[in-house]
Image (tube, rainbow, N blue to C red; front, side, top):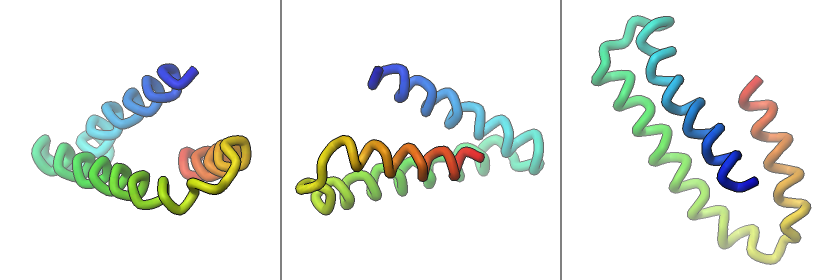
Length: 74
């Protein structure tokens, strides 16, 4: 199941570069740089929050993050 979630995440990320180019007229380099900045921020956030959530049950974390991800995707 984990691999399916990662695959869906990366499909959205790769699509985002094309969306930035098509919808907002960004050049290739700017669209790629914007997505790269997003990925760096996402990685940093996951790294910082992993220690903060270490005492929380996995079920609670997954439920909360699913709600946040659904809201963000919408």
